[in-house]
Picture (cartoon, rainbow, N blue to C red):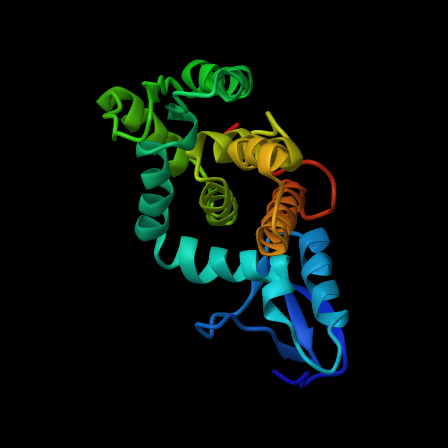
Length: 244
């Protein structure tokens, strides 16, 4: 898509921040007006639009994509987005362990067990762990706890939570990222532990490496989005986190 604007600005109106392209309000793909909770987030999204060249590159406008996902998805179709995020809890990556080799099993135990313990303690969601790929039922009370943890978030946090769960394959990792229990770098390392182990043994190919690099960048942008939405309208800490 060719760039169709010159000037990008932000404007506060009625307690919400809007982004203007040549004086016209930025709208989502569903034609909803973009309204953001604070100036820092609005400025960060606006900067993505300022940085575009002659061609607009939507796939690499991570904050814009998360904003659109919050407005068109988490706000307009909250039940669907929450349900999809929840599906990662029913088949959480951290609950499925390798049977061998022993070195990989040890790494998974060392990295993943503390996160499962956190989810059990912090959210009351104790998950069953299984070896192999056979589907394992999770306790109903644990699944209910995960649903409550998802429901506690506003649309912006839910969009970030959903994105993090999709990237990592783990609702537990996503909840831990939202709660600032772990960083994006730590979450991605935990999510790609198996891939890292295999690459150490057999090496990597360029295509797989490029894919992982892109996913890592997207998860880092999700972390930044979470940091920005936690700020008050004036720019200081203030917005609560439902999953913390």
